[in-house]
Length: 193
Image 1 (cartoon, rainbow, N blue to C red):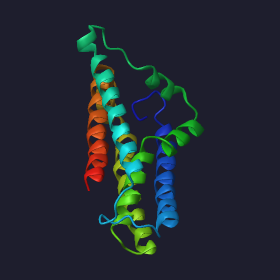
Image 2 (cartoon, rainbow, N blue to C red):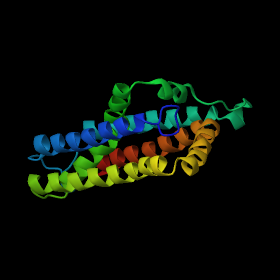
Image 3 (tube, rainbow, N blue to C red):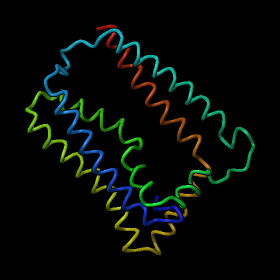
């Protein structure tokens, strides 16, 4: 968002990210705090099968992204259309994308890990508030840097845009592969246990 044609949207995006991170985490803790998420608990067979299927689907997606790399297809890398759309979106859309972006999957996983720690709901909320502050500070530091030192930040942000244009498919393939292995291995280990 900072590298787009409308970098001011990064502030509203961060607001959406922060509110949804804490809100989703708090809801998970409050609604599921009474269930057994300890490592000694056994997952259901259906949950394990769903994890394996999801892992296989992510593996297929990784292979598809990898095959669409410009170095493999011979096409000249172009800036993705979504980069242009980000530069034209309203602050409301920036907020909504921040609130419902890929962070939701990470937040759910962090919420479940907090529940596995077997601490009180109050302490879990405090831990999740700290998690939210860490994610806020890391991304907020980048935004602050871009606003305080715009000339030097512009050089780095331009390089990021170029890197995305050249490597989007490869990066997506790697992320999908890592998630596929992680999720499928949890399902497989759950079936073995």
